[in-house]
Length: 237
Image (cartoon, rainbow, N blue to C red; front, side, top):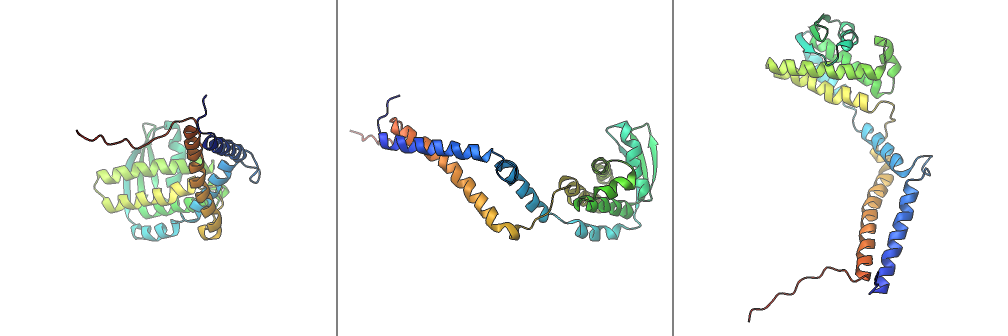
């Protein structure tokens, strides 16, 4: 390889070597026993959880559905989940009839069902999975998966019957209760304000590190005589 401009080439090589050295450090378990990617991912998950607690607000909004009759039939993807899914609704005071192994006919109080789902979601969000598993007699994450599947089926059935308000309430419980409860289970919640310095540092480092590699390539290419220049405009004779 012919080096035409030694100075920029040397700068580019130094940038590239230092970039790779930092990359090795990032993938080393030097951040409380974790590598940099896992550490930053855990931190952002904790901060995300700290700003995602909407369960009390949703619980307040579904109070208006107390006593509202629920009568739907949902289809499960797996027939073996019928018994465990039925427990969710019978615990909430509803009656459940299993038809053709995969079909559940549910009748009960919509408000009571939604409040029960939110109670489980709240326990999961607060990392108290034991309370959920003891309530139904099986794994807490399995419980939340069944809630998600069943409520999604109810949401579709209500929309089909043009019960817009009821469907929106179910959708809110899924998105702001069941999903955060499941996704953030066993993650400690942190406030962004308490880690503003670290957040800013990580974002600044990300931008600077990206530019770092870009400049390394730029200077190396300049050193071997490859560069981009604006084309000269040809003048007409």
